[in-house]
Image (tube, rainbow, N blue to C red; front, side, top):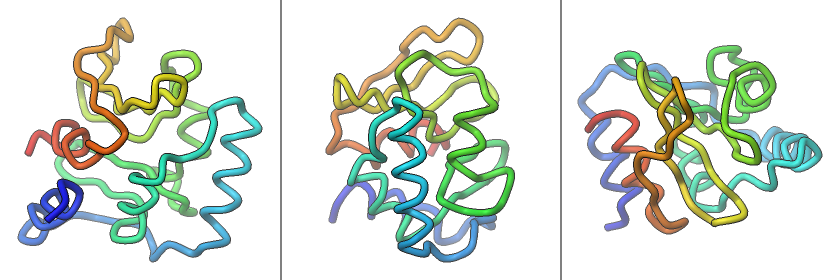
Length: 136
């Protein structure tokens, strides 16, 4: 079982709010838009997660998707929220940001106040990064 699947399984008994099912066209639009913003492409491992939960919020933690929900839209949040340069914002909680650094091919847990990198996860460790931002 993959770490993403472990994370998804850990959500089964929780009352989480999630966006509408992922539409392939919406993911393509988000990919192009984020790429044109200079942020690169949504990592394949995170795109896999979006097939299960296209944006997710639970107990003060948020993960963004290719959705029209303003709280969960990855394009809107990357335009509106403060984040480290050259990193794609994928989610946040009260204290930290979940970013993807395409240049380093890493998921990063970043302090919201000073953008210090607190934890790093390789591209294949998406589930671990998601669990960390959700404090599971």
